[in-house]
Image (cartoon, rainbow, N blue to C red; front, side, top):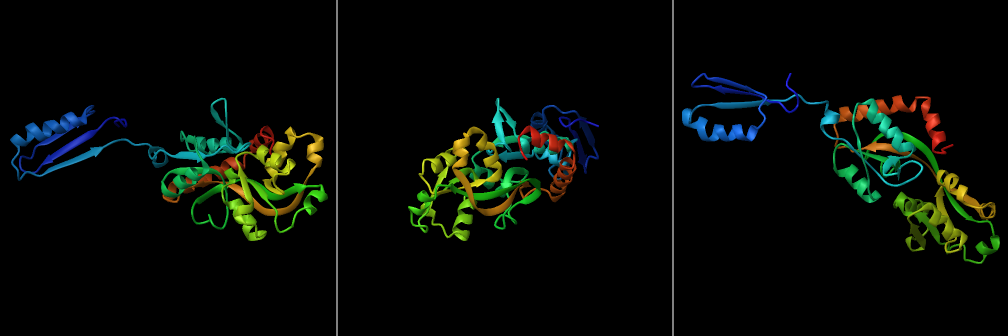
Length: 288
């Protein structure tokens, strides 16, 4: 069998009954030029020329060049020493390894990641919140972690009572995109004008401690990570006000992809997630 760089080209010439077979052609364009310039001089115009090119190809999911897109969202996905890292990243890499697939992972702005997953084929996206609005926009491969979004506030009730309770300002992390604003507007009737977005969770807590916002929206898993950098006094100032939403983050894929490939990814994910090593992986990244 010829390798993927080799070609088996067969010509069937109806009139002359001539059959030419060329194996391991390294420069197909040179041969095509020869056909166009020289061979046509020998073959009448009414001769039927059939050209079939055969090549040995890898499985579909490898041939089509699957890519994964994500954002910096520790401890699930981030960059360390110039390399992809994180709990979710390692799970995704294990899934790809299970399929003998060399996966390219790209860190891009979150809106661009979602756009690519919605408009291109053979795109994996993680760690993405699964919501009713997104349910039919992606193929959901598997759950990476269960995260809950809470509204946090300062314990100092004098600070809270000093403002009109219908005039609270809220802080959110921009990397979780507009879905958090939807939660606020739908459940708490918060106006978009009363929401301040930041890029990092540490900035979010800073807004609240400095009283630049009245409340913040923060996932429980983010709190577990960020509280390690807070003093006991700072931690004692914060409290959960309410559960805003109980959500899970997922590995998902573009719907434009081959359904057979999508099922392969789901099967591989289920196999990886059931491995006992996953608990060790969670411990490695401080995920309870």
